[in-house]
Amino acid sequence: MLAVTPEQELRRLALRQEAAKAEAWRDKYWLRLVYYEKNLFGGYKSHSVNPNFYLSKWGRISPRLELEAAVDGFFFDGKDDDSPECRFPERYHWLRKKLGLESSEFSRRCESFEEWRNSLDTESVSLLFAAGYLNNPSTLYGHTFLRLHKRGGAGADLLDYTINYAATADADSGMLFALKGLAGRYPGQFSTIPYYLKIQEYHNLENRDLWGFPLYLKPDEIDRLMRHCWELGKAAFPYYFFTRNCSWQLMPLLDIVKPELKLSSRFRYWVIPSDTAKAVLEGSLPGVPDWRPSLWKTVDWKRSQLTRDEQEQVLELTRGDQQAALKKLEAFPPGIKAAVLETAADYLSWRFYAGRINKETLDGRTDPLLAARAALGQQVTFTGGPQRPADIRDAHESLRAGVGVVALRNGTAYDLNWRYAVQDLLDDPSGYLPDAVLEMGAFKVRYEQRYNRYYFKEARVVKVMSLNPWDNWVQRPSWEIGAGFEQADETGRQAGGSAIWTMNAGSGVAAEWRGPVRQLWYLLAQADGGLGGALDSRWRAGPGVKGGVLAEKGPVRALFEARYIAYTFGDTDPLWAGTAAASLKLSKDSALRAEYSWRGEVKEAGLYYNTFIFPP
Image 1 (cartoon, rainbow, N blue to C red):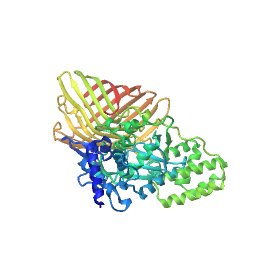
Image 2: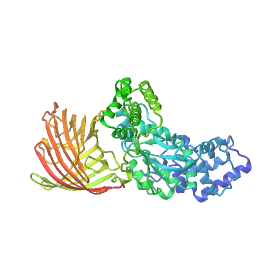
Image 3: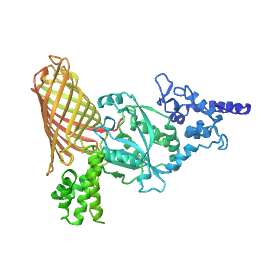
Image 4: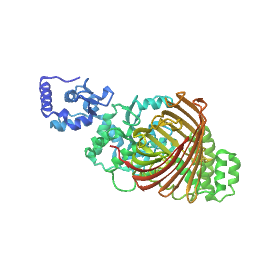
């Protein structure tokens, strides 16, 4: 509803004319504020799919009509809180400057916005990075969001809030959830969430480390952030797990807040949270980032400070006969008793958040422990904390490119490999997940001299593997999944003519040995299937087993692995395959790798040089 007195109409037309003369709708900042991008035909389209993000009916595809509607919004005749200026404070803050308007002209009292901003009372901002979580497709590579530090609230985590962008997902099954996330079928939305809830989500529920990196934002930039975040409450963007995800959407937001960062222009096709974090951190304050270890990491460290007998007492208190364990604990010195009780209480909390026990069991077992601990009074139990791991700044870049020379039975071949993300068992895991494979978009092109032929040796869509050393306290299995194209050399076809689509999954156990050379042994039951013309029956499926050992010492990592698949459907010829490989870390972003592998009767040995690069 617009006020249209003759004087106001003349003023409205004059402002429109002034905006047209300045071609304000072409201003880069205006295009950023409404999230416009050019299409193939030279026009514009905004990413937001929520019509409430626009003032014009055609605002999503017309920066000019949206700007003209914003000019008209100065003449809104209604409650101030409902006015366009109060709904979009940063747009109008910029537009006032662009048109040279005095602050007294068209002044509004935006009570809802001011109340929200004052309640947050932000003094500084930091970038938070939550480590990757392999049990959720949308957070495989971690998660980035912003923490708003309340003025004068140093050390008071309960007072802080976060700016979070995430998919608003339905209660879909795992496979449907992944497919819809890959296709952008979930809306992504910004929200302000209390920091303590994010701690509970990542630190407790998902057992992920949280890193906090302070950002260098001036007071006027923080004000700009708050004004624009208020606007984003009305926006919704298609959420894609591996492209326009939490990391991608954070970049245009920070480009608005601090334009000189130019983050959006640095990524074109692919971005994961670690990449965004590294790009943003180039402008962060120097110093040691804040690190909050996961709940399990804290429990595990406390356990390491106890003797074996004391550890057994913790298990009895939490999973056995608690009354008998409490009585036995009376013989321990007060300091030791207090440490055991504290560890037991933390372990129960972890079991609850991990879904191993319900709330009733948690309360029933924790209350006696807390009462016994309180009766001991003040005791010195644990000093220090878990060892600080490498952070994301110490990690190699996410993309990997490499070249290699391969010795075959009847000649030589040359390989060119490319992987979009992010690690395999032979890559240095610093800053990433230990004992894990997380590969997306891994390709290997081979040139074989004997046939003068180029072909895809493999085109892996996804491979995820989590090797969890068996721990009686955690009881977490090891597992893997994978899908992609590969050459089934065991079929005996000519080089490059045996491509099939394969899918596999496995689950089993792993055991760790810590000596002069750390070793991780694993054994997985497998289910494997393949489709393709290289197979006589065009398909095959069957069970199998995979076993291996990963060894590491300093910059050297070695892997020995073998698998046997007994195909019982389709083509029934069994598959024997294996690998013996070693890598030498040359620098943070380069490595040398030697590999010997066999698949059926086909054997090869290769030497590779890999380099890790920042996404283009």
